[in-house]
Image (cartoon, rainbow, N blue to C red; front, side):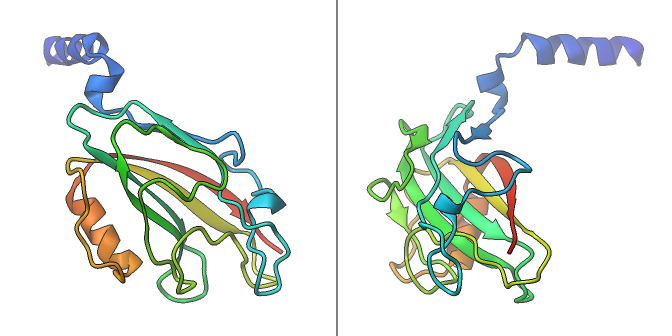
Length: 175
């Protein structure tokens, strides 16, 4: 048994990270576990942010990645089903970052605000700070084929069905 574990460790260490599909997501604007800056907070519904999507960077996509998708989800929203803040898909495989305020890459999907594009955090006043989960998906297809009015759940179903790897970054915001 010890010999088998040692052999597995050698194989794992000898395999390059990109071949293992160790996808990583970072942001110069939003730090994991930290409070989301006002620049990236919604400017509506009583929140006074600038509603600019944060810059994101990813690396380590597995072999066979044909496209990417990015989502932002609040599992703490008082809806019973969370809240989708951003659904961006059909990002070409050669793209490994998004600039702050990115709107011209991929397909902007519908959010739970009823619109396409980024919608920043704006939890109800008095709630404990909500978690905002930024996720990048490496996909085995170059295009998610859904109707233009597809819900975030429909896009999500297709993301999970075509996922090779995913990486997350979770930040918080409360008021």
